[in-house]
Length: 411
Image 1 (tube, one colour):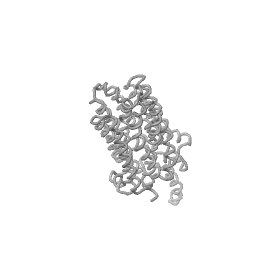
Image 2 (cartoon, helix red, strand yellow):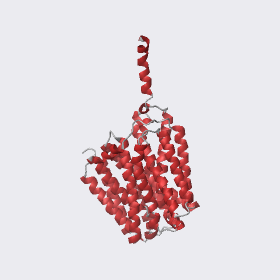
Image 3 (cartoon, one colour):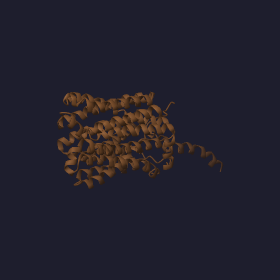
Image 4 (cartoon, helix red, strand yellow):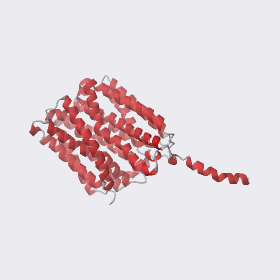
C-alpha cells in the first residue's frame, strides 16, 4: 500500500499534460494548423459571398431578377447566423477536428449542389447547406488558436485565423468574378467546393485530436448579449455589415449602372477593392488593439462618405474607371477593417468568454449579411440599384451613433 501511495504523485503531472487545453504541438505543425484554419475561414466566407460577383449571370441562368438572385446570399447568411450559436452548443462535446472536417464536407456538398442547380429552388437548398457549414466552421475555428501554439503566440495566431475572414470578404468576390468570366459562374462554385475539400484534408492531417474542453450552453452564450459593451459592439456590427451588404451584394449592377465599366473592368475594380481591403484589415487591427471605438468611428464615417460619393460623384465624371477605381479602393480599405475591429471590440468586452462572444459575433455578422442582402434586394427592385448606396450610407451613420453613444471596452 505504501508503494502504491508513493507511486501516485508522478501520475498526476502526466494526466495534466494530457488535458486538451495544455496540448502542445511541434511549433511548425502548430503554425501550419493555424494557417489551415485561416484558409478554412477564407473558404467558408468566400463560399458565402460568391453570388455577389456572379449575380447577373447567375440570375440570368436561373431565370430570376437581380433582387431575387441576391436572396441566395440572404439565405446563407440567415442560416449561418442561426447555426453558429446552435452548433457551438450542440456540438460542444465532440472532438473539434472531427467537427471541422464534417462541417467542411457539408460546405463542399453545398457548393457542388449550387454548381449543379438547374433552377432557383435547388440553389436555395444548396445555399442552406453552405450556411450550415459556414456558421459552424467560423464559430468553432475562432477559439482553436490557443490550443495550437505557445501562449506568447496566441494573439498573432488568433489574428491569422480571423484574417481568413477579412481576406475572403475582400478577395473572394473578385476571384470568383474572374473565374466566372473565364469559365462560367458554375465553375466558381466547383472551385469553392474543391478548396473546401482541400482544407478538410489539411485539417485532418495537421490538427491533433481536440476533445471538447467544456460544453457551452446556448443560454450562456445569449446572456453575454446583455452586457452593455457587448450589446454596443453587436449593434455596431449589425449596422455596419447590414449597410455594407445592402450595397455590396449589388455592386456589379450598381457599377454597370453608374460607370462605363465592362465585364473585364468590373473584375479589375473588384480586385482593387480586394487589395485595398487586405491593407485595411491589418491597419484596422493595429488601431483596434489600441482603441476599438476610435477605429470603428473612422470606419463608419469613411463607409458613409464613400457610398455617397459613388452615387453622387461617379456619374458626374461620366463613369470614369479611374474615379471608380479610387472609390472602390477607399471602400475596400475601410470595410476591410470591419471584421477585425468589431471582433476585437467583442473579445475585449468579454475576455473571459471568448468562444461565446465569437458565437454571438458570427450570428449577428451573418444575420446582418442576410438582412443587408434582403434589404438591398427590395430597394434595388423597388427604387433602382443606385438607391442601395443611400441605404448603406444611412446605416453606416447609425453605426457611428451607436459606437459614439454606447459603452465601449476601456470605458
